[in-house]
Image (cartoon, rainbow, N blue to C red; front, side):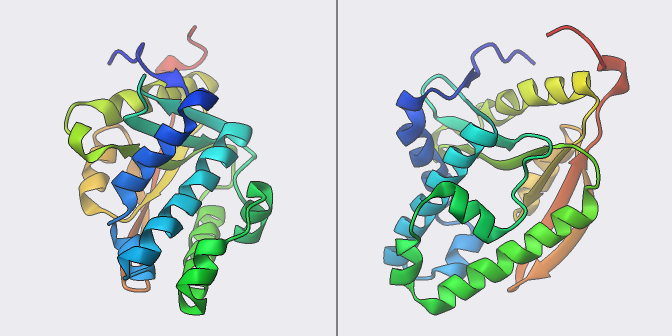
Length: 211
């Protein structure tokens, strides 16, 4: 699949990238569970993804389509967040939306993140690329943006002989990733939310190939 229209996200498109992530994830099962009130969900979702984009820009790669209608946020091998609080410190942002949403939302968020981080650590013992977020604006979905966004990093991971890892809470996404070489390594529930933990092993036939 061609991916010459996928670029490393420039700073000038960071706001558009965060907007894309917010639009794609604001009504997902995790955000609805953690923040049932829409007035709390919107600022919470934006705060989370501003941190994700900032973190991945520093410690990994952020890929985007030219107008940031699609975004892929990766953490580089050896740079995966080891704890929620560590991530928050790296973002250097006061979690105002959590305070406004209340202590229940804060406890639930950190409980989920601690669980996800523990599974990540249990499943992945060697260097790997971590897909922290993949999003396409709702009106642009079904046009191949998701596959194009994944292609550059999967090709790079093959060249470097490194696996890729991700989590998803949507069964439809599981099928999407399976078609691109991922397999389900573990499935679990937390706070009544289903989670699939997936790994893609590198294709040895592409190891060391030129860019």
